[in-house]
Length: 352
Ligand SMILES: O=C(O)CCC(=O)C(=O)O
Figure 1 (tube, rainbow, N blue to C red):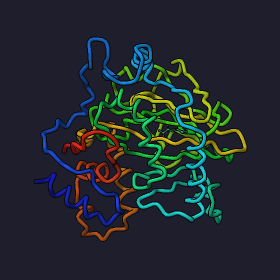
Figure 2 (cartoon, rainbow, N blue to C red):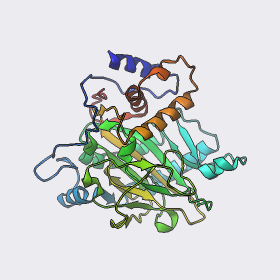
Figure 3 (cartoon, rainbow, N blue to C red):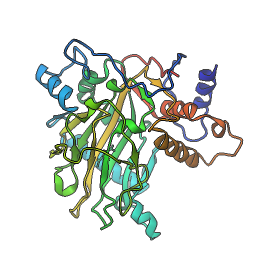
């Protein structure tokens, strides 16, 4: 019943036209974080059989939690996404449901911001845009995603990141974090991020930095935004406690190179010390029949609350709107259902 009510509400959302992905089954879900997972074969847990990955690539991902595929996306396609991003920032194209994020230091300065990409740090939730979804549904990307998520795949949390030159506030950095901290769905090992460099990235412009193998610890760590001097952007929480001595790898990549990484992998990106913007495009993929869990009382609660607050604020809803009366778990379902799209295989439906 609850699931049907949620589904109806999702379909009639007044917050934004973030449609639905069909079919819904109701199952009982434990209240715990539910991170445990079963191996996919005697040798592998984080990858599945039958995909394009070589044995060596699978072993590398299993051990390290990331895998870079060189030159996966053509420069022509990337140039289209780049131009389109500029058009969106100038207001020449409107994308339904899109969130446009600005750097916190610019927002605090209350200056009149130019109506172009120079004040935009990222755009997210472009699931209803046919141009940028060309990236998320690109067969070149999906052939790899299948090796992590299996054959039935939805994409969610779509982003084009425009890391600005640091204004001196360090706000261009993205502190070390785990993406799973933000995600209320399981199973965790079938979730993967695809992140494609839209130009050459290295330490000077704030490439991704990863702690290889950190996904194997199998826990979501406590995150927060307060300890970061100079502040961090909205919802850029960082891990409070990790082994500072853990080896780090800075992923220097060329335009079109793509890294796939596990959602428990500790990663982030440093300040952009150059004068140019550093662009990347990414999406998170999960099994179409993933299960929404209740993160109340877990380390994920803080992030979920902020996500929900932002979602409700964006909708500017009247007090008595049904969304304002929902539990965190119900809202997690509505938000995920609204922002995800099936990109390959069976649209099995999110489980509640
Ligand atoms: O592109 C970046 O700078 C970091 C992206 C990232 O880690 C994220 O969005 O989770």
